[in-house]
Image (tube, rainbow, N blue to C red):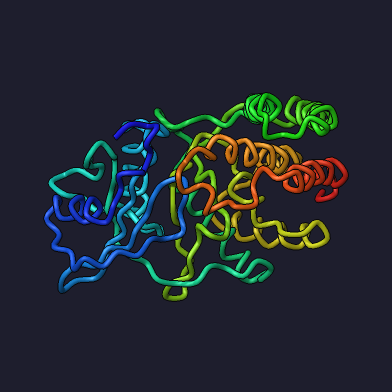
Length: 322
């Protein structure tokens, strides 16, 4: 299956054949889960609990990178952390079917955390602290390394070179990117740590599930070498609540792991990087056959105006969390 086709050949019979190739007898029930970058399905299994089948987007990660993700999950589960490790079949966890890399894992049922529940934020801080403690400081060998300035440059270039961005917005967009880039560069020069650490990399609310009165951390697809604050700041939902939310997160976190408070000065860097990179990611994925259905609002003039306003908010709110 070529990278241009992506998931176009991933029909129900292909999904079922992939699962059954590993010795599981399906009942032919398939339920697509909320995932776009990869394709994830709940697959019914005869006389057993359903399994989750995850098919990796072609050419996004190498097999070595995926294997390192799996090895990390298996280690964390062995250490007693509430994560969902992939199934092992004959000593393997990464498999290939019709050119697609895929894996199987058990199903976990539960609820996502409430955005502004302070008690839950404390628990989330505990979980992330426990995660970082278990991961240690030895960096990943195959996963990516965070680099905000490089990410901003690459994402902004893709957007400015695209015909999707209205011509009338190119100059103000370029100026806004320049403003934010300068702010990010100043903060990075002053506060960037000397050493990165292995982190989850995308620990937002949708990647957490409360099951059996315990939060579980899901989807290590973006695990990388980065900063501790990257796994925490995504839970700060409003500027006027951020200090209180951050206090709960850090109190929970430091039950397990010391936090370098200098990293707090980099929250704005990661916030604007995420906003810019998300728009560039949408541009990159718009040729996927499933894109229009998943993102029908993308690329309108209204979308780009809202995106530009969001970047202006990043600048206007700079430094208000601290």
